[in-house]
Image (cartoon, rainbow, N blue to C red; front, side):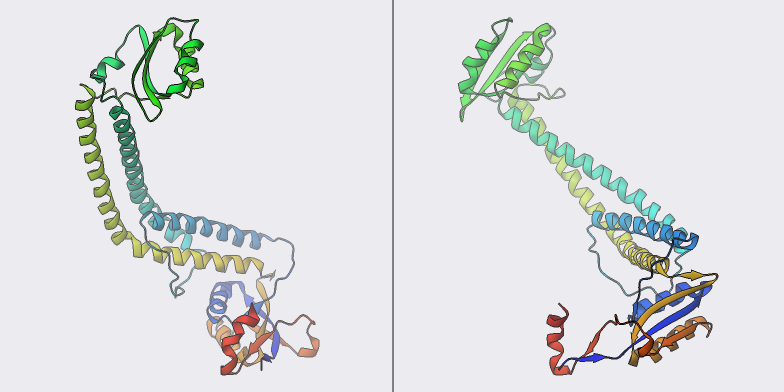
Length: 339
């Protein structure tokens, strides 16, 4: 059978200089169910809320860096030394140093990826020009004509020609493949907007001609393939650089991430505790059999400066949390009951 554990309501009265250590101790013990108390915002609460917000921002920045290095996030043991007020200043310089190195790598990696994507697109487009033995640079250096090269659904050619009756134009279908025609369309530069609008309405897909590649399409394709191989090699070198950065920074960043995440939890918890003068009040519930361990731990970290008030059951409010202590044979079913 499931046996409810007797509970005791307690109020911990903690001096402000001890509140960080006491809160950390309570977090480690995990035996006090803290009650939420409605209260008006105070300057002290605003201060702790600000600290919590700053730590959450640092936590996000560290998580982004770890993700960039492909270092998996993993929960570490709670840090032994905690300084909720001072850890911000200690963590920030290390975080900025890591951001400078890792974000520089990210920028170079993104640029190289964009270069590779652009080269892949240019290669696909130049391949469409292979049947046309015209140097690529000749198509991009026309002084008086606006020339557009691309593919269009073959069924739209007649409609396009009809739409351009108002302007002088030249249309040269080069070849047809899979229902689309490679088309060269030209008009005097002053009529370029009309031609471009008509082409768009006919579902024309333009080919971006590379300005820094010369020669016939077959020769241009060789040049572009060589550039793509170089870009791929550069991307592989950047992947190796990321591995080196992960070895240099991964463990350190993971420790900082665990540190600021814990500091954020502590600051958020302290923000909720009522403060009267220099004394914080931590109200909560503890299992009767854990009361001694709670008292000893709190008094140890405060040097016996804490006051712990234990309320008798008949004086407590009716809303009492329930803790189940189960015989070993029934513990496998506790998760079902909890759910």
